[in-house]
Image (cartoon, rainbow, N blue to C red; front, side):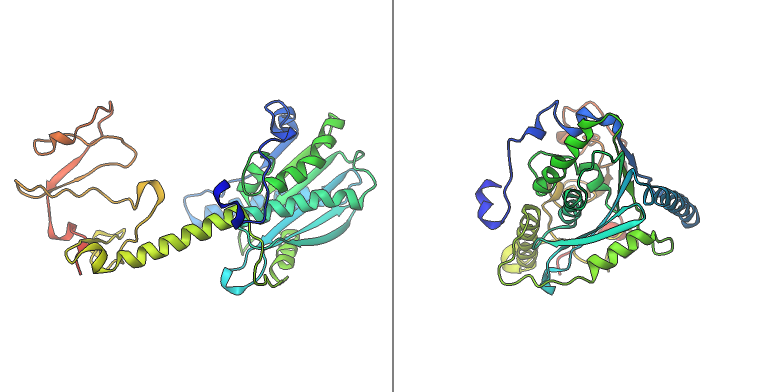
Length: 339
């Protein structure tokens, strides 16, 4: 990261007072930070729809009580990250509700990924409180609504990462406020994404962030995560293009193809090379040279292949041995193509 610091217009602070073990907000006040994150789970679409409906009902009740209270502040955030080809900035927008009145604002900080923009929105809303109110010491609870579970889990992280400055921005306001009174609480609500069940306050902020367009210009600022993502995408694109050239891989290279259905392997697209988890994951298909071709399939969660008479040299020193299916190789099992 330090070698590529000139690629981004953003500083990081390796040492800060909020990153000490006993001074982190999640360490000093863990019981006063409440997370309301409901996973949308269910066997059928109807079951998942019921969970979303119940979650929306809870959000509406919480918002109706907190947005009209004199002792509560409600912050609703959203971010819009346009494609790089559009030439627009990433927009971080927010609404602040207090005593049935709301304030809206947004930021544009160049090019960013969604997690950076969402954290930027929360940090901007928290820092705006000092400009709206003379003092927030009388406020008992702060409610934050966001549609990003990642941000709700990592918004108080003061360590080095792409959105560290935004996290330190909100910590500089919330840490003194939390330490000033033992009755102060922060409630984090996750807003699930669904077109059928819309949380109207969140939809209004989404409209603000989506329809606000600011041109990025020739040399826009970008976050560390965005620069990393762009470099990775460019490298993988060039690698995939070169991987298709016969001058690079040779004329007899067997290009792997993959599909969920075994009968569709021949029609499936070629698998592009990948840098994640050691490369593109494939089922292990072994063609033995000195006997009838046979195939072996092992679970990716297990660390070792079972030993047979033909692959005893592949045994490792791991303790667990998975169950390996063995059988004759059929033509339909082959999903390689040297075309």
